[in-house]
Image 1 (cartoon, chains in turn green, purple):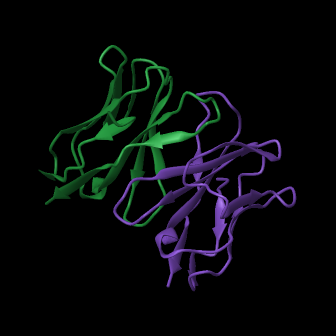
Image 2 (image 1 turned 135 degrees about the vertical axis):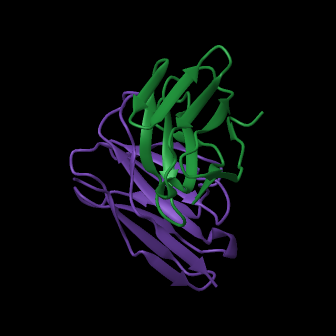
Length: 111
Length: 115
């Protein structure tokens, strides 16, 4: 099993829709997880961090389920500007701060 | 807002040539990283650096790669003899501390094209 795994999509949704992405991880020692947003050929930019059960910021909600080893990202009321690739990442167990990324989930929000 | 800066934004080189990719991490950060992303693939960890030494490196980071912090601000990645398969985006990242809650901030990347 890959350390961090995501459905690559693409997810095509209309404006205003609610969309959810899941990410599974295999290293049960991981304590901290992150959702990054990546626009085409740009750097990952932090969207949300998830340390305990969950985090909410405006239209975005992240949940962590340690028992099932997955993290989710929910986007409500999608905007055209939400179109991007969403990367799930977790710190490895080595404690050096190495981030392990999933392959990303592509979201296309259409008018 | 402080940011990680990388230069150049695009580097074109011939196979077998040496390249140096430069990064200026955020000024009070102590932990530094290089990642790469081949077009269409995921972001992959290369190396982590703390207290002037490598703390972890991946299998990708072989003898052709080296990192250095030559002064108090720059953090460089050198590829000694580039191969075609080194063509990728290279991202530098830094974070302030070692807590799992410390976030890594990424630079805009250097696109390396090996011809």
